[in-house]
Image (cartoon, rainbow, N blue to C red):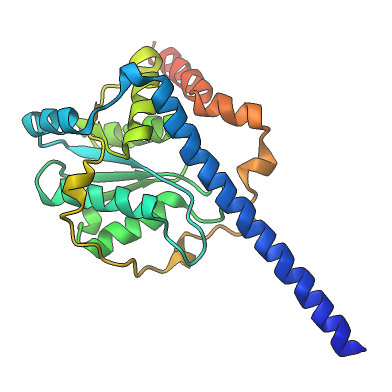
Length: 246
């Protein structure tokens, strides 16, 4: 009887674990879909990777490139995260960027996204002293804002935003219309990325783990999250910055 109860409890725990993992993956899929949908709607702001890469060649080197985070699933670094870090490594290794700023807190999963990416970047060969992290950002516009603050603090004058095409186009549209933070954009050129030798991540994810984590889904309504994605919080902080500078 006792053994049967243990088996029932284990099955219930296993089912809850699977359900939690399924929810996380659904959130990740929804995020990717959202950015791609927004990029489609904002087609006039499409950051064509070929055109913007050629512009980056002419404007390089940048003092820093900003690389936004993406949720880290336990024991499984997504291809999205790997691609962004590999692109950052390519830009650093080929003289496009002197430093890299990774941005992202523990938003949907209990791992600080920026620290996960930073560990992988250092594993790939970017010197630790050229890697910076922002752990405050919870939305793409905040990735841009908080990272640019880090750039200013370190007197980095020429800065670019480097990520996948959909997110690049989405952030560019908001930045061009409202935020106007002075950065260039270097979206991933996937044909170029294919030439990079892909090294499997070998990091200690526990170093980026947050105890007593509460997902943003449980802290904010979907409408508040959408307003955050659209930059409401950043616009408020920028107004405060302007007031403080008077």
